[in-house]
Image (cartoon, rainbow, N blue to C red; front, side, top):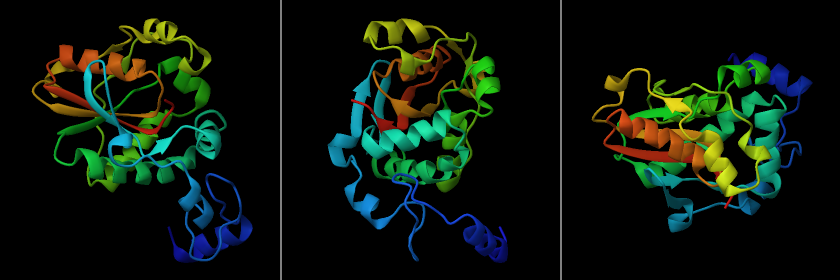
Length: 218
């Protein structure tokens, strides 16, 4: 964007921290210095977890407090531009933990009905932002073929697993066959959604499935 336009927008709509929503000071970008220090960052082995069907899932943040609030605004309240911030944070986490371990980036897509209701697919925007920061573009390998209840509304682990079992397919298996695939989503709780994605990709011939999410709930 034109620097003059940027300056005008900043004057009309002063930039705020994505997390605490306080006005940013000169030199701060996307998040304030206080949040940079205080956010529940996951580093080292803490940022990694294994799950059913995927070798490793990495996340830069824990899903709590202002991180939870920011992701809820991003996902449910139309703050779609947050994908730029979360994408950058996720890209750095991927560099730190998954460098050289994947061939293709994709995402856990919404159903067509949910996308129409929301107006955007938050996982795609996140994957696109992170992939661009990593010098590539995400590939649409997965399709959600059945509309399901929102995972966020289900409390029991068994309910979450059953809700997404078998709902993803790979329309073009040749695009996944023989590849190491990195699946991106916004939040990982039980890992059920990512496990369902991984199952579809492995059935299509993927040799490995890795995952990354902006935040981890557990």
